Length: 165
Image 1: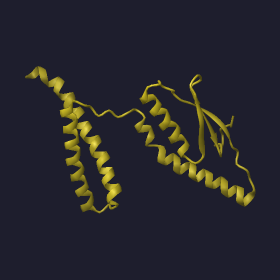
Image 2 (image 1 turned 135 degrees about the vertical axis):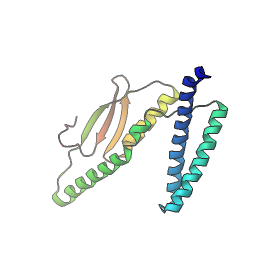
Image 3 (image 1 turned 120 degrees about the horizontal axis):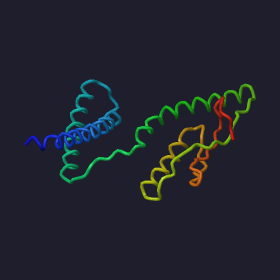
Image 4 (image 1 turned 60 degrees about the vertical axis):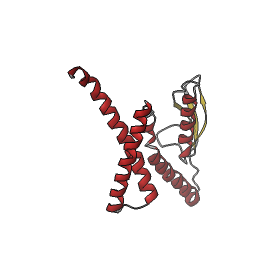
């Protein structure tokens, strides 16, 4: 019995981690769809999300599948802040243009990126990378140079202290 404990513990932790990841996603959906932060609504959502996460984890366990969270998910959480910051930058440039006739310093920039493989996962990663970088209003991705490992973008307003290429 003792020999099985070291192996069982990581499996339990992995299952708990899967349950927690599912619960966070499902609770987030609840808050978005319910559009209420009243305590009783949040409590009902937490219970429903916990039950759904349990059933989801149970189905994954029974199927012998594992929930794998890609490494790019955590950096993607910075995207809303980047969109908000770039929106403020673009509106400030618009104000300077309208009020003072001052043109923004725009230019091209090369950002280092990992091109990845030509597998469906690599292609999906590149599509999401290009889409996410182009979502912020200050930048637009022109393409990825796989040979040099850089992403070429155009910025409407180049950040002060950074030279445009």
